[in-house]
Amino acid sequence: MNKTLPNFTTEDEERQFWSKSESTEYIDWIQSKNTILPNLKQTTTKTSLRLPEIMIDELKLLANKCDIPYLSLLKIFLAEKIEYELRSHLNS
Image (cartoon, helix red, strand yellow):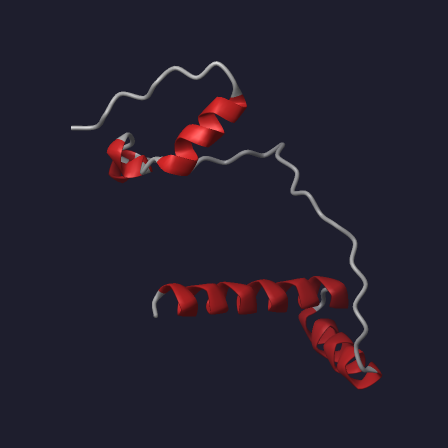
């Protein structure tokens, strides 16, 4: 039996509640469904990264073979490595 969620008057109140509560006590995640939010825009931040020229050249070569921009390929590689590392640390 799931607990009843309290009524929140502000987003800060809700945020504080969830920071101290276990969601599985309130939500039956087994019955959850995936939702597509087509108008949701991901926030991005510009960053500067110095890389060796050979690394950029090799990245461009790989990106050309995949027919995508090299910066997009770099983001894919970073996302994959971050996910791998997070899973490795969570499972240890």
